[in-house]
Figure 1 (cartoon, rainbow, N blue to C red):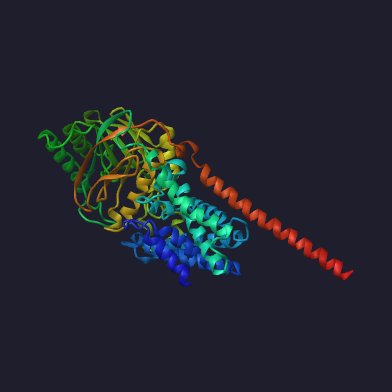
Figure 2: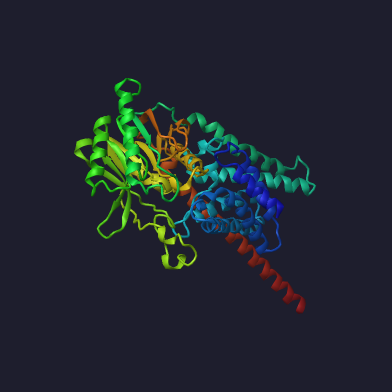
Amino acid sequence: MAVAVLGGLLLFASFPPRPLWFLAPFAVALLTLAVYGTRRVRAAFGYGMLGGLAFFLPLLPWTGIYVGPVPWLALSTACAVFFGLWGVLARWLGGLRGWPVWLALAWTATEWARSNVPFGGFPWGRIAFGQADGWYLPLAAYGGAPLIGFAVALTGTALAAIVLRVRAGQRIVDKGIALTGLAVIVAPLAGLALRPTLPAPDDGLRTVTVAAIQGSVPRLGLDFNAQRRAVLDNHVRRTEELADSVARGQERKPDIVIWPENSSDIDPLRNADAAAVITRASERIGAPILVGAVLLNGDRTTTNSVIVWNGAAGPGERHDKKIIQPFGEYLPMRSFFRLFSSYADRAGYFVPGHGDGTVTAANVRIGVATCYEVAFDRAFRESLAAGAQLLTVPTNNATFGESEMTYQQLAMSRVRAVEHGRALVVAATTGVSGIITADGTLTQHSDQVVPAALVAQLPLRDTATIATRIGAAPELASVILTAIGAGLLLARRHRANQTQVMRSSGNSE
């Protein structure tokens, strides 16, 4: 139990804002030692889940900052179940030759499962999202977050194998230990060796100047938008201040301005006043603005949208958020969950969009993943398939206070930039906003809850990384191979049972 808890805590410590990415393999090693060779399935599940709780409980407290502990505890427990599932798989697959590889595959497979079920999944806390500062990051360009996760997990399971072999009295020069030690060395060094293959920060077809506006909000919490016009005015004001700086020659004039998610919770397509001030800001800065807006539909549902606002020409293309957040933007089984929390009816009535994940502004095709979407592999894959040359993550973190959530999300954006070989702009209402180059470097960032304007000249690209080309293949391969491993064990067990039956029959005769 102590080893499992320590493993979960080390995994948490490897995540942002701490730059302790190198703790993750040791965390997996401890979790492996906790579940490997357990006699009962329920013990393997229990130790795995205990490690999961030790990881998710400190990782996700921001989910309950303003709504109490019940959602935080429920979500952490649900996610920890998948660690328990990995524990069961680890117990089974530990009987195969080369078991460290099988356990690493199982880790990737269970992360895939957690990213898809229930209610569309919750990918937060995938091991790759703690590696934005580490040696493994370049692997994202070759297999996305799944390949990073597999490499980190393999390092950890191989470390555990060495410990088990040495503890069993096997010699250090043993061939098995040598091969396992090679896996420990090769996995992280492979990422380090691939770093020179990533695009240079200024390498591209041409450059555009992009500004990210962080206007901040009157107050943090669920009521951040109670003064909705104030939130909009904050972003207009900071954009106009940037325009003044451009006029004085202090800043480069942007070709595109990006506002955060929910920067206008007043529907500018229905409210003339909101449309007027956005138009004024766009004309003043002399560039189209990507406006994060909440739009009211005819059936009283809402969409979380990013609209390209072209000055006096008004609204152009828009991205309606496709992956919406359960228990926040909408509430599944509302009548049931109302029994457990008085905040249930504060969940929204948002509906998902159906676009290709891109908008065009200033003749630039921009891939958009709004806030929660960036955690999902498929969001930017669709954008790249539609020709995105630049990526952006407009986000609203005001409902999560000054928590670690924003740093966790920023790390996801850095992984996505490397995965797809694109510069990426994060625009947040309250921070942290950031400019990220295609090699994952965070070149500029804002402070939390402080109005800011980040301006950068960024390259546009149309080349595709290997990760972009192969899409979901690495994750699907891990699932298939894990299933094959389980099948091999079942077949072996069946043969052993048949042999035992035959011997019993022979003895009887």
